[in-house]
Image 1 (cartoon, rainbow, N blue to C red):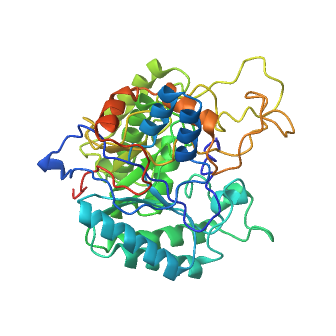
Image 2: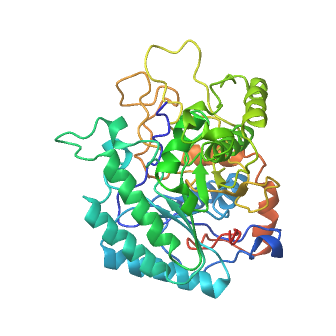
Length: 436
């Protein structure tokens, strides 16, 4: 189910998606290595037409409540997306991030999004032209990171959308799965060779690939060398589904490497229970059947691969199109209405294998023109032309803030007490050191 085509990142050099202030009341725990978040002092580029512009417009209208909600939306730490650029430019940019992070005892989240053949050459087409160019770009990012502590989200959709699933290789899309795996492994080895980098690979999301399928892809990409994998980037799946799905993936990885009992499990990721078998993907109460399968078949091994969840837009779960919609793709993933932000960036999860909830995709950024079952040019659900991919979408941003779950109201008093009237665009994140 290739529904996670959601990295609608603008094509300018280096897209900064950041926030304004630290998360109020974030816990600090020595055991997990959590450091307090802090605001960076140097402002960087906000998305054109982004939260500052929306806040100013709302305040000019006298709509101070909604302006405060957008301010709160923009106050939650999220990742810095690296979407291209010349190696010398990206190195300097990342080095600046790391210097600011060191000065504020923060841990930045870098999203590397420049793999050749990115996004099947669709909404977020682009990426390095070939493997050599990509390796040079990765090396530059690594040099910029240096010895600093960082979390690297390595190439959203890179395993979910393998070139073979994109119709490749062909004359217009000359990329192969073998190239993709080699590029990811080389990048993974480059980043994990750094002294304080924790790297996560693409684990898709719970309404897409089956557990066995994504586990095989992760194993092929040498996930055992990484801290783990990430889930739900730019999607809307609920935390209960994602936690279960992520736990199963980790168990499946352990299952297929268990040499006990004659080694009948070795390499057999396809045997793993999933959201599709024996569970019913549409009936969460049935997922206990897959839990029971792992209880019976995992053997005396322990799941060790950790994961993180993008909770930036999943507070209300996924959108379901009207049952009577016309024939055609409803594009549930594309700027769905009535959604809300989820758990704000935090390393406090109370789930053994879940390292953090992170806002990776910037809430308020458009997924692109959503024509659904029509030929466009308007979104028939919103009755408007959605902004281009990567642009700030005022309507959706306010929906996400208004429908937030947990709600964003507790942030407002903290922002007000700090005297904040503008939104700096360059800040850190509260995340654990992930040294396990």
